[in-house]
Image 1 (cartoon, rainbow, N blue to C red):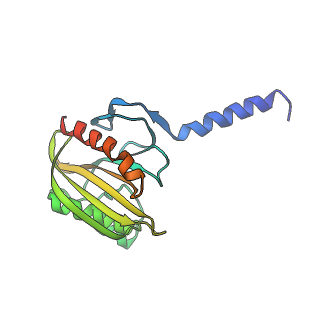
Image 2 (cartoon, rainbow, N blue to C red):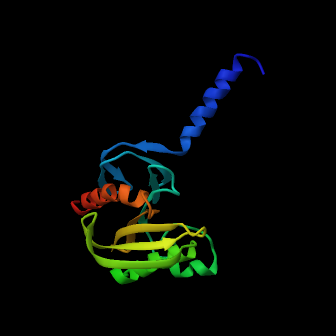
Image 3 (spheres, rainbow, N blue to C red):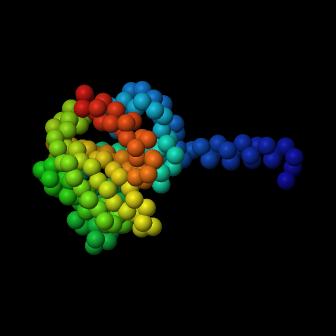
Length: 188
C-alpha cells in the first residue's frame, strides 16, 4: 500500500466506526414524536420506532424507546417469527394491565428469567394517560437487573420506554436521570 493512502484509509475507518451511534446531549430533544428532556448525555443507536440510549454500553444500562407500535407488531419491534413471540404482539385497545403483561411476556421471550413486575400505576406519557411499573429479572447468565417501564396506548398504537440496568451500581446511579426523563414526558 502506498504511503499516502494509509492515512486516508485510517480516517475512513474512524469515520465509519462513528456511524453506528451518535451522542445525545443534555437538554430538550424530540425523539420519533416524543418530546423529552434528558439531564445527562447518552449514546444513541437504532432507528425510527426503536431507539436505544446508553451511557456505558447496553449490557450496563439501556433506555429503549419504542414509538407508534401498530396492531400486530411485536411490542419490542423484534421479528423472530417464532411461536413464543406470538403473545408479544400489540393489540389496539389494551388496558394498562394488559400492556404490562404484554411487556413482561416480551421480556420472558427474550430470555429474562425470575421476572417480577410490580407497582403498576397511572403515569402521564407524552401528554396521554398512560402507565408505569417496575421490574426485576435475571439475564441468561444470572446477572440481576432492575427496570422501569412507562408508556401509553392511544389512537390504536402503543409507545413506551424501558430502562434496564444491573441491580448493583448502574441501576441506582442512572435511575434519577431516567426519572427526570419520565417527568419531562409527563409534562407534554
